[in-house]
Image 1: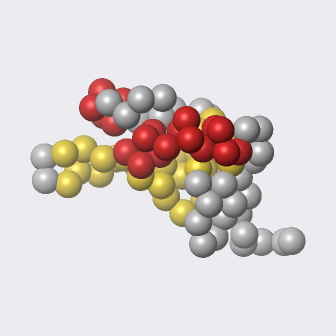
Image 2: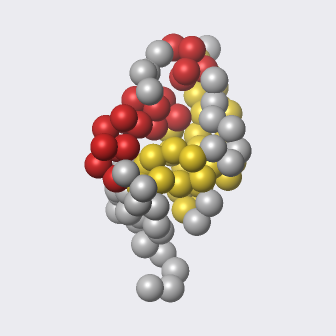
Length: 87
């Protein structure tokens, strides 16, 4: 997926599967979009995306779209998981 201005302005759809990278509270992999929150910074729209099973954290859409190909190569079919909750 290329990082173009048009893609950044078009948010993902609820139910769409995207890759997320690892961070302090979840593993990387595929996750299903559960909500998209629009925000405006100055005159620039931005979107923050939440995922099922990782609802405690929002991800910046601009960052997500630019990393999709690399994350796909890294994670393949692996599902992202929250580090919170039962182990």
